[in-house]
Image 1 (tube, rainbow, N blue to C red):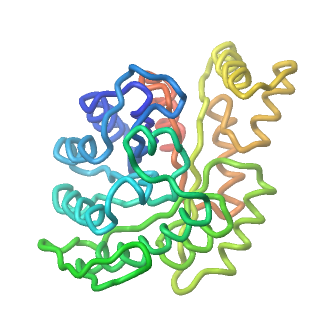
Image 2 (image 1 turned 180 degrees about the vertical axis):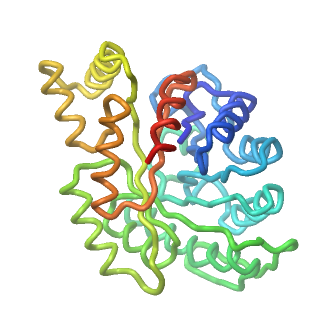
Length: 301
């Protein structure tokens, strides 16, 4: 999981995707943000779909996806058309992740309407009603409260594009269960996850929709390196206390932190809770050690 809005050019995104393919990862997802979400300004921030198109043309096996694309950035029918074009370019390796959007600053900076929570969720529901038939069958005739389209795509999306919804709001989890192939959640405690998982399972209509988790991964064979990264994270979050206390708090909050063996144990615990897939978030674009160690450890599971 890449966060290119935090200092990556399109060329750098392509390089990282190629590295991930070489190391054997199954997929690379990237955020769809228009500004750095850290609040920094004046740094590189590669546009999502342009960079994914370049990555698709530069690779052969690895899957590519958005995690997630806010409905408000693009007309939903146009977004589905873009996804269909990427599916064609990548020979069937694209996955579309959708969300309600949360970073108000980027909406306002680009002159995009940013409604309140209820309306954003209503708009996401409307967008999913329209997008699902377009990414599955390549055609839709839909007229909703916010969005409408009467269109057919050529070429058709082959195979049908997997559709994900990311979010932890109860209403969003229910939308994922109704419309999507996968529900993705940002790292959280086991207790929080179990509550939302129960809502998700109770709301499912149809097949066995997958569950996936996205979150940071601090992995190293050097204890000092782990300590440094943990304390940096703690400082950003305003956590006080000794290293051991902060480490335990972050782990209980759902972050994967430790040596390769420790991260593997944490991963297996979440597998036991019912998570099917993991997106390991690397905000720092030059963490080659962490990416390589993770690939090595995953290949041994």
